[in-house]
Structure formats: structure tokens, C-alpha cells
Length: 461
Image (cartoon, rainbow, N blue to C red; front, side, top):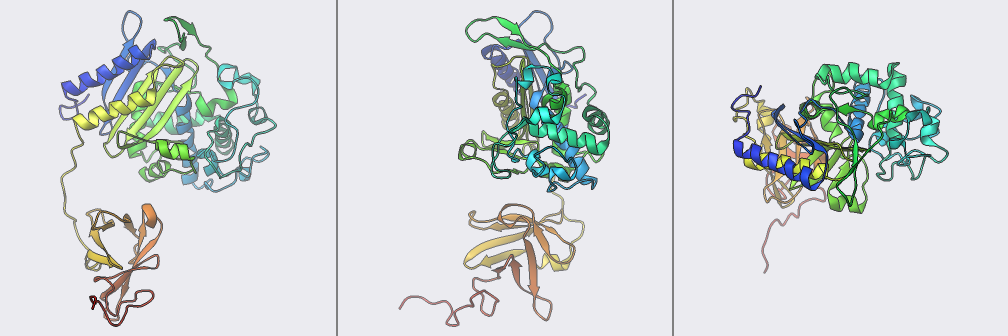
């Protein structure tokens, strides 16, 4: 139950309902159900249906298709965090004999392993998994279509390999591992490999007539880790909250932040579209927002999960048609409606409990050459370096506990910020990956690479 502070305003709820009503009507879909989350909780659900009777609610199952890959990626990251594997490991180290074992686990997670997009033979999404009983049947005679690590190329067989990796290292079927390690701890009781009543049927809608055709519902077998799951708007909304905040029983917030970082080279068209693939998650830019999540489809179903971490708003859209509404566009609009109508209220400012004087000495204005920067210390102990002009490189830095700091993002990600002190202990300058920051531009006597002209600053004449 939501509290009055968590409930959306009536105008916001009406705008959300209007958006999905337009999507269901114009997209000509038998039914569509949606959910919006905020603050780690589901704060709105809505649905529209073409037939008489009650519309589906947040507990009706739909097939979520490729969103299954995000669940599989969580299982792989759990193996990494447990020390069982490293993401840079070649697949052969843990699952030998596939024929594509030089691809690393990170490359498979990010679709940069060079694997083909689909399986050989008949379309795997519309045929029984029994036609592909083993990995050799999934990969075929020509499993690689690109050099590994060079480009993003979406690969469903790549996630079948990751599912097989999970099974090998956990000694149990993929779905059993998923239920034990992810679904049960997160309370996703209506998420399963096979449909459970009540569930929607999958339909194709004729492109030129208002008639429908039932789509087959196949068990995907070896390809299950790429797209098998059925779930509900309520469960996927709870999963979205987990992807934002983490849950130490499943995966830490730090590991989930890593999953949300682009991890693969993209083509020029993807750059123009604001699209990148991370570790089992898609990153898109829409309405000026970074939205992370995953879309999904299988014959008869469309799905989308998307989150604006900055706004702390998520949206889920599920529909039972092969084509029609654009689920990402609808989900992005739901996020925008809430974020604009009811912007996130920041937590109250709180001062630091205590401050190390040696750290406090570093804050303030610094110069890299003639460019002015400010170094700030926040209550969480993180320092940030920001250009005062608004243009230039910026980053936050985490303390290493030895007087140095490591960059967390941007150009300085992974680079070390080190205060260089005089014999009396005062700070002479900052060294950031060989860049020298001084208290005054080209400060006299400072250790500026190349030296400082001894004639100093002067005008013309």
C-alpha cells in the first residue's frame, strides 16, 4: 500500500492512463498493461483491453522475451562477485568445447563477441526448442560473423552460452538457479519459465484488417536464457527497483552500476540514436534523459522495462501482440510524464559528521594551466573536480585510504589524483595522471611540466 507521499497526483494518473490508452488503441493490441515505479515501489498500474470484461492487472503474466537476458546477466555477475569467474575470462576457461571459446564473458554479456544474431535453421522463437537440443545446434557451422571485441552485434545465441555457463558452474538448470538466486529473494513469485494462470495469450494482428491470429507458444529449450521468461507488470516493476538500488542478497548496488555502463563499441547510427549496450542492459537517450533497461519481444508479445536513475522513476509496458505499439516509446513517455509532473524531491542536505583536515585542505579553486577548476568535498566523502567555466573535464573521485583518490567517471575514470606536498606538509600541487593543478595559473616555482617562463606574466609592448 502506498502512503499519501508516495501516491501520484490525480492529473499524473490520468496522463499515464491516457498514454497507454492511446498506445493500445493506435497500436491495435489485444491488451496492454503498464506499471510505474518511484522510490523503490510501484506507484501506479494501468491496463487497457480490446475484449469485454475486466482488463488485465499487474498480476497477469505476459511473455517478456529478451528482458530475460537481464536476468541471465545478473546470474553471471553473481558468479563474478563470488570469485568463481572474471568477466575478462575467455569462455573456454569455464565452458570448453563450444568452438567460440575465445570470446570473453564480458563480450558475450555486451554482444561484442562476434557471434551471429540468430540460430541456424528455422526461426528459433517460433519453433520447439527440441529442434536445438545442444549448443552445437544453437551455434551452427558458422557461429562467428564479426571479429570479437570490435563491434556491437546483438546475439541471442551468445546468451544461450551464458545460460549454459551458469548451469555448468552452479551444477543445476538455468531456471532453477534463477529461481533460487534471484526470483525468490526478490519476491518475484509470478515470474517463471512456463506460463501460469492467469496469463495472456499471444496474438498477431493483421496489418490491413482488424482481425487476429493466434501465435504459437513454444518452449525455447537451450535458448531459454535469451528469452524464455513469463512475468507480470508487478514483478517486472519490482525487478526495475532492484536494478536501481540493488539488494545484497542478490547483487550489490555497485555491481548494478557496473551493469549500467556502456560496454561495447557501437556503430555511428547507434551513436546518433543515443543507443548503447551495457552488461545485459540497454542504454537509450530519450526526452533528454538517460534510460537504462531492456526491451523484449517474442511472437505474440512485446515488452519493455526502462529506468531513469536520475529521476528515480521506472516504467514497464507489456502487450500481447507481435507488432503494434512501440513499447520503449510508451515506457519512456510514462517516465517523462511522472518526472515532469512530479519531479524528484531531493533528500535534505546534511553536513558531514567529521572531516579530515588533510582533505579539507584540498578543496577550493585550482588551475590546470589557465583553466580554472573547483575541488569540492561532499558529505559522503567523495570529492569532485569541476570546471568553473562549465566547459571541460569533470569527475568524482573516491578515496583510496592512503591520501590518494581514484576517478569514478569520464576522462579521469580510473586515474589517480595525488596531492604533492612540500617538506613542511602543505600541498604544493595536485597530480592527476601527470596533469599538474596549481593554486594560481602557472604558479611560480610550481612543478609544471615544461617549466614556467621566469619573466612571468606580461602585456604587449
